[in-house]
Length: 393
Image (tube, rainbow, N blue to C red; front, side):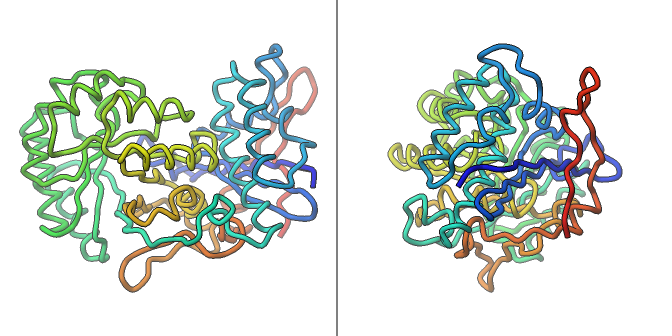
């Protein structure tokens, strides 16, 4: 097969706010080759990601992603790895390239799975897709009372784990943050796994993060996620040494395997969280999962958007029976829900698994795409480089 077409679709909610919710817009990728179709999703700002695919070449090491993808042979996983290496080399100075390629790479795996009649996780070498314990991923409330209500909603929905993120944490006093942590614990109950995500709020300020550790311990938090900038490895390592009970988590900001490896080796994280829509796709995510296993670190997916992205993110650790924690979008915007025709539903025990179906095992609802599609055109010197593609029913 040869890659005949790569189509990018920019979706957005009618109103996009400053809320730290990545499901407010999306960039979907449709790839066609040999009569088959695959779908992927970039976890990045759609417009610059489109530009990275179609932009004019700046120089030999700053070429558009399209130049390394269109027309390439696609007959097996080795071809995806080969194309990935070419994108990385030819677009090394195009910093959006990794994000753009991530969605394309997912779609290539999906297409190849349909061509072979196999789920992606089996093509990665796994024999079985093990069930995971999904955690309800949500934002902290504006007040501890709001956080309490959020926690109760997750418990009422039957989740065995919950993560609270961003919101006011780190912007006020240590005491106020402690109240939020306590409210979260009270809301979810004593037996639910509780995780906290602070969205890089402390930059590299180890002392500020460490001041919250006693309250996190009191709330019996499983982890503290992203206290610092994604590549602040020294800060991570320093805090890890000061927090033996509440382990650190991070990795969603890793744009390549090396960044994830450094968080493990130098940052001392206990949980490495990889976003398949950012790191370069499913292949490098699987590489991180293998490394985590070798280092005794728990691999966790990062997914705060759609179930297409959720399935893609689960493939890399689907076959790891002992790595059971799974981020699960709890309250996504309607955009992320409406374009997925076959979501990954939790079973009667509240668990979820990567589908045992060809490719990513997720069917796309074209009408759901059309409802949020942003009509877009990129024109340079009178030449149209990109126009929203046709979306067949």
